Image (cartoon, rainbow, N blue to C red; front, side, top):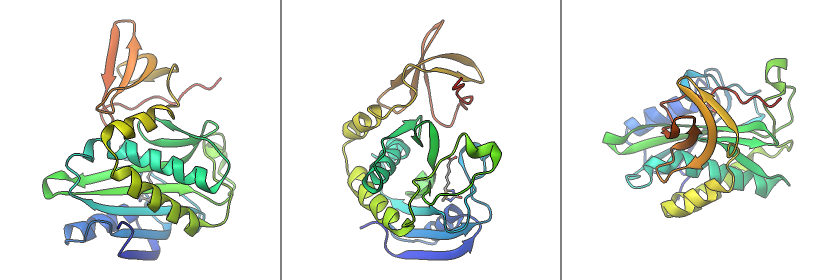
Length: 230
Ligand code: BTN
């Protein structure tokens, strides 16, 4: 059972920080931390994550004994978030490698996995924009929301979808991710090269066809430049 026990905080720095502290103190598999508001929400690669109070699902799950699933956890979580969003509203979600969830080319959810593999736990942090908000100008072309009110209902859907996907064989996670691949065929650039995205390999690395041949980029090691959507 994931999602219990649950700690809900009106305001906190970062649910991932709270969940990591609980995990380090021995919290059981499935322990959930949620918040209405974060003052220091964190994103991947050192970025911050902001959301208007009460407008988003802000959640972090403590997961244990993930040895065989750990490598694909960020990808499986992105698939689960897509499935949850699609159960709540009539949309089709896609995934920008490795785990940004997009609706019509705008980011609706982000995922940050942090862990102490040697201690046998990981924290899966998810931020999903639910309620309609006025984004600041610098985000308005890049971010979106589900446009509904019921953040708790969305959380329930996410937990259900995660329960199913975390138990899935890796091949099924990979197949479900691949049909949602937002980058396939797109020109991508990173600090080291550029080329055409060509899907992911079985380790979840992004395959890119460059002038010098096909390369595999590992998540965490490269930072893709923003897509030029013309
Ligand atoms: C990203 O897209 O860069 C990842 C964003 C992850 C944000 C969520 S919000 C809940 C949890 N707590 C955090 O501090 N970060 C994650």
